[in-house]
Length: 191
Image (cartoon, rainbow, N blue to C red; front, side):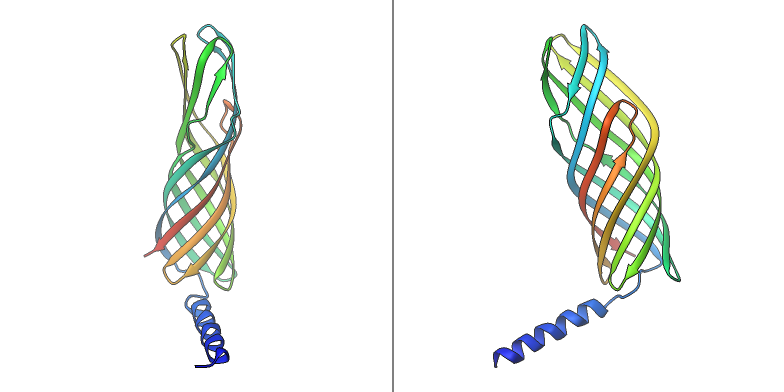
């Protein structure tokens, strides 16, 4: 078999993959992803500490989600909800040997997407019901905060039949956190 035949066969297979699912599907989907979160936090009045500043860079984060997509002409509309764990940054702070932050929450989004062949570009807006726990030792100091705030995101996803690969940026406006965002890669399965 010649080199041209092999290249022609690979090109045909690639085009066939692109044509497998040129439109989004109406229905339910589930997914999960991993990535990195960045949280910059300054909390006051933790026991005897006057201030804790945690800005130690990126932390491993993960999420699980489910949603429903409605494919209408020119745009896809949907709803999505899930759980996100933004990691546990740690830092040495004045008056304590170590402080750590645990942030997680449940989110809900309205999602709008535009298809360009098997690629979708999307944006989403919604809310996150978050829970934040700070632990500093010594002295033993634990602070817990929770609330509900704005969340939003932008991303793209590529379809291969019922499987989708997604890359996205999400921003969480958590009251006690100066900046909180998540960069992630996810796999989705459409039913």
